[in-house]
Length: 122
Image (cartoon, rainbow, N blue to C red; front, side):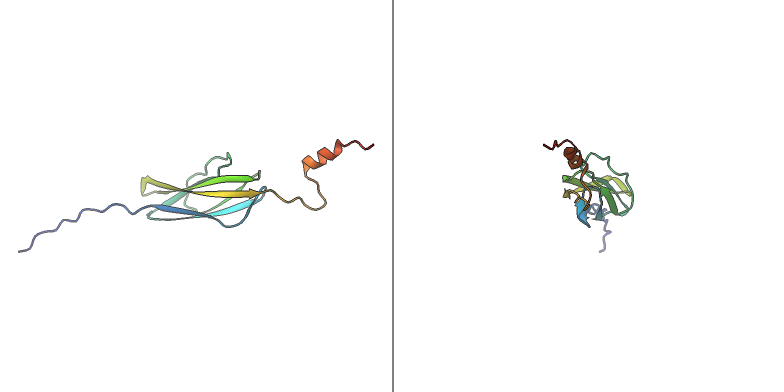
């Protein structure tokens, strides 16, 4: 005897996201970050850089470029959403150390030049 078999739809795939820095981050110079994901039919991405700049708009691009103006350590947050299932979103964090820019030879940083202007020679 044969009986019909009903197959219920399974759970959607697990959505994951990964973010990596593709170059060293230096204040005043653009740094590039690449995001990848699994489990999304139509992935869209957004990035929050952790330095008080607004979150980027959602888009399909996987490469982000950002210039931090101040040296320090920031927590970057990459988000992925499946455009086919907008309620499905996940994030990944990356701690980014932004190094101070090296002064150009022959040029003094503005704060040092200003300090030197105030020195009194006796």
